Length: 282
Image (cartoon, rainbow, N blue to C red; front, top):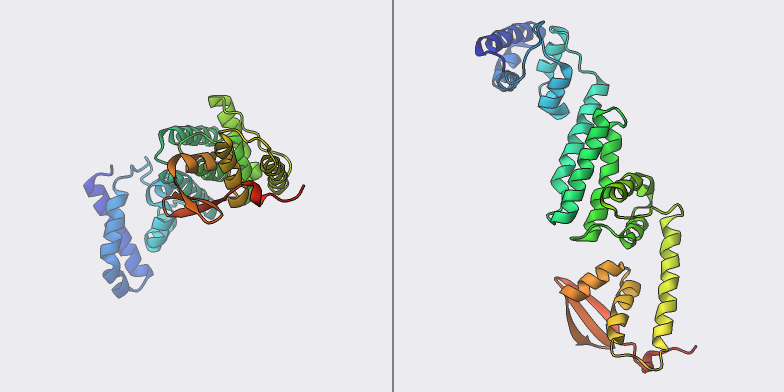
């Protein structure tokens, strides 16, 4: 921390410079705001030559913070020679946004720990110069979104398919997280090379075949309803198998016209009755 006497001296130098550079009356009215800047500046150590490092300033105040104190930032640049260029501002902004992503971590222990480990892994690669902080941020975004689909478990292949259907542009960015999960936690996720839309429609066709086969089962076993309901949820409500299983485990079933209704929180899911009267012709 800069000694109190030293920061006071710096503030007096700034005030004298500002009085000759800008409108004196306006400077006088804005002094309380500038005092706040120098109070915060006191927490940063000065270099041996009596200045501050631009990286430290960006990390301490952030891009937005320096924007709020443009006159003080101008003084640092013009008088003390602390250059805070556009490139460094962008890098600082990216770093802040990357760290802010940690506030979106889920509460569930398993995905939370996996995401924290992935964030640390990306941070290490940034520190080593392997990737930019922007690349790290863009790689962490799909990891967060994919984890939100998986609930309290680690993502499964079905989650990947459904995520890419919603966000096909994230396919390349998702490779880093999939590779990390495979190499560190043994979770074998494949990020398909073909488009998510193609994969999704292929899965829809598979479900259609499965539904037709079930509708025409002559001797239905006692577990027919348990097999039918998740398949019907997947097909009619466009959800993954994991989501269907979770809804059935946590939700409440009640009789509804032409089938049953599954209640889960504020959501309602209708499941048609697969009885013979609803069969189509072969």
